[in-house]
Length: 341
Ligand code: F6P
Image 1 (tube, rainbow, N blue to C red):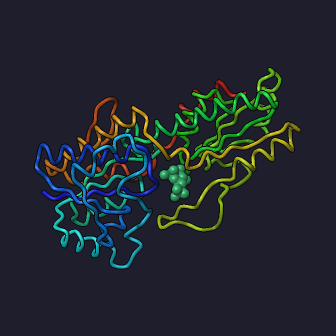
Image 2 (spheres, rainbow, N blue to C red):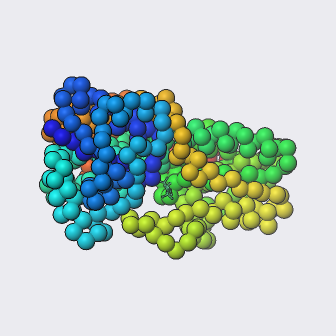
Image 3 (tube, protein in one colour):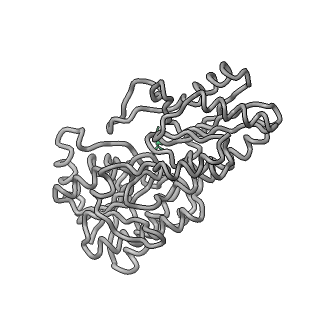
């Protein structure tokens, strides 16, 4: 069998570990050939390929990013996109695809499967918001980066008696904020799933200062104040309809200063959370996902996404993973709330 591999959407640590596992097992156990498609769905759409053999995957396990490149190309928004993909796959002699991506990339994979393309999905996203898997790889690395930042901000916040706001990624799901905020001992955690009251945040800030301790506020980029809207960078949308977020941290710092008279500053972690080497947990998860993805392809189990359920790697339908986002539920948020203020 000749299998195409692509990585789409925002990159994340562990992508190369999946590619390595897919190719190594595919070649060693099944004698398959692989073709790398460049830059997500743009690869099959425009016929952009690269060599993908065992030699190409040597040494990539600890490397962040993706050797295949990525993009947020949506073939369903391009004229004859699906037909072009089918034609290019045929021309390159590709029997099946392994698509590694988040809700958008795997949403496309799910639709293509419905249109007769043989595809297996592998879930990735630092946001951990794909449904029907307990975790996606990339999330653990991103949380660790955010926690290290919070630990560092604690000491400078204390020295200067300031409130420090850490803005982390998470458009519609607050998993990074929740986990890094709990692990970092935040004075409060603000997530997109739960609109926040600025008055309440100011109370928590004041109460931390009263104990001679400087508050750290962890806020997801998609968090929304009760009487306001999501803060976006500009009016542009990508091909999946997503706005560029960022700015809610600065907005909140301004509100805190005005309302409490205490100095407040913001650190936006941005793409630092997505770059660099994957954690050991993510390397293992990504490797296990890759091994299961090639086994699924070997067994012709098309239309499936590999997933983590407990400690087991299982297969679920692509549709079940992409129909809705996995949001933070209120019970999980309540666990964290005990420590606010
Ligand atoms: O991959 C998802 C994500 O990490 C979101 O949390 C964030 O809003 C977005 O990527 C940023 O993506 P880009 O790199 O395209 O600006």
